[in-house]
Image (cartoon, rainbow, N blue to C red; front, top):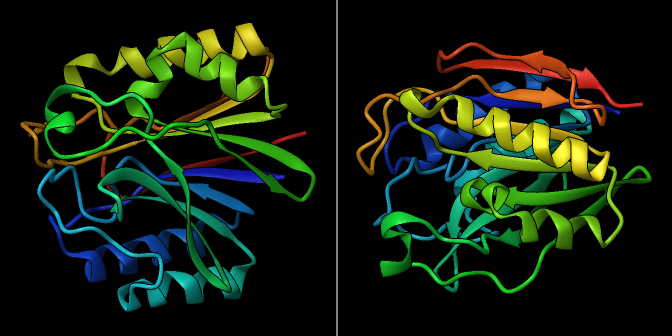
Length: 226
């Protein structure tokens, strides 16, 4: 299965513009699954309005997924006041996961999700995570216990902490013998993240680096999972 991680440019709180950027990334990726960063459809703007699964502004992304046969995993604030992952394909969007471990100021607005989530795509079991989830060993363990082949996460990380996602990804791959993919925000965003890490990457079940983006917005990389 071809898996991509993308870090598209983001306009704060502009879901329509960001959906268009996501659609362009999907078309360019040529992958079955494309993973996007945490809150990628709004930016890391903790006061952004929720994005419903049937939001018409998602239409360009739905169309791109229909044209390419892609499943896009996009980050957004979702109803119920959660930091969520929207699974978008040619039929529309659905909330696939709600972040379980909140960090920083997130708890002032958002509610933590209460369960791990796994998607079945072409026989591949894909566990989902968002940012701080990856730093909590119990999250990876609970997700892996559901039977997964890969652990996919969207993140926002400061440039000064660019090594953190790598350390977490290698640990998860080593402990659970699964592919790990991290889509990390690139470019400035809210929450004090004037300089984000980028460097989205994919690791093999042996914790070897399979693909790595740079730190610029608009980059994406892919790997073939086998």
